[in-house]
View 1: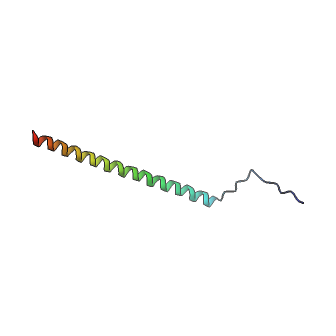
View 2: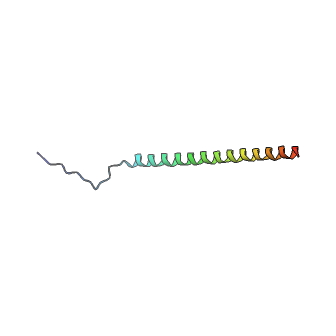
View 3: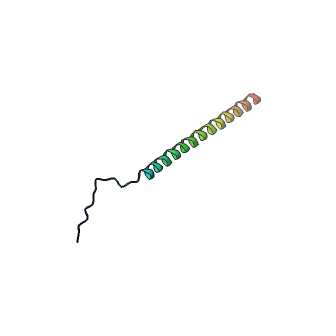
Length: 62
């Protein structure tokens, strides 16, 4: 019976699948960073509005 030798030095990954996975990772990383930027902008806007309303209410009662 012939012996089949396993070649452990070769890379069996398909380059197109690897690049697709890499592109998906990059895409979702940028989507997540965009999400964080939008959340930060919304929080900053909310805090500025709340601070302005608080200053306005203090000014009106004095």
